[in-house]
Image (spheres, rainbow, N blue to C red):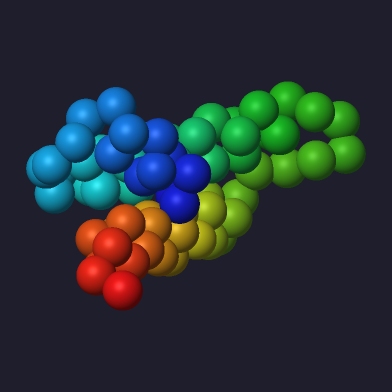
Length: 74
């Protein structure tokens, strides 16, 4: 989430929608990773892992938002 937010801010400056988009993109990446694991022998995809991926993407995005928006004031 943090790296997605940072890369999106560097490309598209100025909008708060970028952070929502970065969270959705990072969450989608986590879901696709879980689906990929479903087809790997010995691995499995669970909804709880997908939820944890989305939550951790949200934490990273919020951290990125705080660092990018409020870090420039110091």
